[in-house]
Length: 185
Length: 355
Figure 1: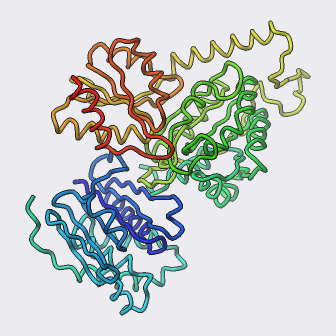
Figure 2: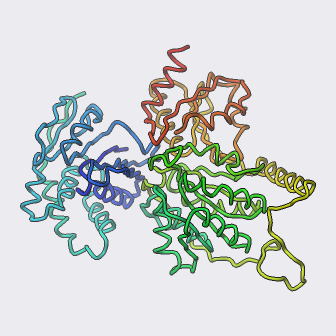
Figure 3: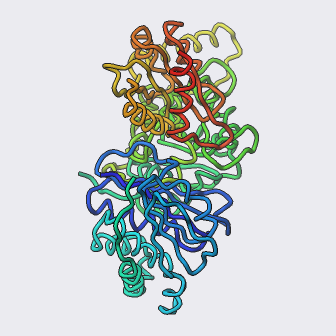
């Protein structure tokens, strides 16, 4: 199985970290991983993204233009990557900051008010973990246990006291998604 | 199995340098390879005593390498395109003086100061000499993070075997992306004695001189002949490449480094559509794997060479096939990376619809 995903949002929202946590989780399961960040001037406030591919086999191209799942943390990311979802693929977005929702009918569209959940948790920095939880519910590419291991690997040790908060955020996102019947393509 | 980690290409290369027992790193930061010097500054000295020094410029760094290599030390540097250009004079001297060292170029878009995005525009510079005079670097082209790590030890082994500079030619994407990497074991720093190294007056009183200046043309020609014999030996013994699906191939995609993986995906999509496409990836760019191209040429309808430049390796492919099959080129430049779909679309335009 190969899953090709892209996490996209504003620089500073933690989209690169989402891919990294997933990547670490995957190698704990013995899978192959490629994590390809955008590393240009967009890191300074523009739109940042990372392509994260998880596979049981050797991964060929780390750079792809069609995705099984697009995770969009802001409106520009929805606008840019909605056309890049493979037919039958998934688009996940945060309704809190979306004015123009996606419209394609040949893909599975999931959403949750991640920004509002983050406010409820009194920490807007965990928005990425909420979205990552939702992503995992939809894609099921690794186990939640592996995500916890990935989280501990990515988070520097001095921040490990924040692991419970991140786990809570992740589970809030995970539980906010109700799986629906997949679109037929 | 060794230690498995998720690492950026630049970090994997730096970690592999520590584990290969490298004695010294001299460098100057430049995007997209700055993680190498950052990682080494943080990790190297406390673990192996390796010397890590940020030089005042790339010109200084390469001349520090010249000095360290002259003492028989394992010395290396890394940079990206504009920085590598600054090192060319020193590289020519080192090649002429026949000293071993390792460099990595995390190629970015050019010419000029260019952009920080990945490119392969430095192929000519890297494989055809780069500096002045008749010399070659031995050039290794990794295509994943694992090879960014593995080619450090291989690079030094080859550099010392031939007493010749070795260059790892990667690109910004290979430097910045993270993949699973199995790290090599930690080797000790060796402190070996070499009969050519200048480490103070030897006990027998014999003088050792390292120089690239030989005023007498006969002497200079002799050195050139020796260098050329060495390059012939590299061509005979060090050619490395990888192939896929050549058995039934009617067409071949060929590319090096990152692009070879994009081409691999394009090949897979093409095969699903019924095109019998094979794949060749040179691992050594110098010496170039001429033979495999010459062998496959009469058996296929054409070769599509894909690069992130205006068409550089394609000249070596053409020289290798000697007109025995059609060779076409597709490339993107200035830091733009082609996608698998784009490659296949252009293949269809050139080879299928045109037929």
